[in-house]
Length: 266
Image 1 (cartoon, rainbow, N blue to C red):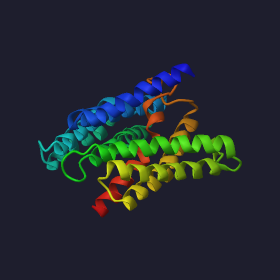
Image 2: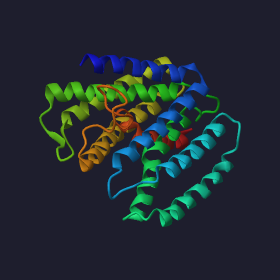
Image 3: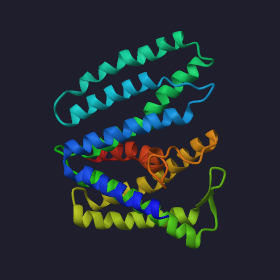
């Protein structure tokens, strides 16, 4: 428990510093987290029959991340995204020479890892630039609501939990915990509107609902992945907390939807 608490404290401190230090630290840090999450996914799913192309997969993710990061920093146009195309093509061609048992499974997992574990972090990074110049308050507010939703769900689920939310995937989650997480996240969104501003109150509340609902579903999706592979944690990079996918499971599903909402509104 002490190890978990210490890891959690320093982990949150690093995240806050990365967001508020400046646009460069924000982009670099979460880009690296995305690449690390992708590597963790490949390590997690790799088996005797499934062999994702880790090298090409990470190369595609790196090119994608660098192109998007340079665009966010107003250094390069997004048109250079075409640079990913040759690497994706090589992914299919490389399978011809690897002589693996299920080549299209390998290709599918290689591409799935990029889509599931890396791309959501690019959507999250884009939240910092969605209103133009870098503004740390939207991504920071996102993280705060994600954390408070988890906290509210844990506390209310532990004290009031009776009805299982999705017992087949996660036996400990309850409807009472889910509702408690939503209530706390919405309450915090009102506070964020008061102190952070940036967005209208209705927009903060809408984001809170998306994070609560789809962050919880993201948690369940990652639990489904681990259950199908027979593992407890996605990794061990964070002592007491598991891996990067364990810590950012809610973000993986919620961040693209929050970005889509704000893109429509703003």
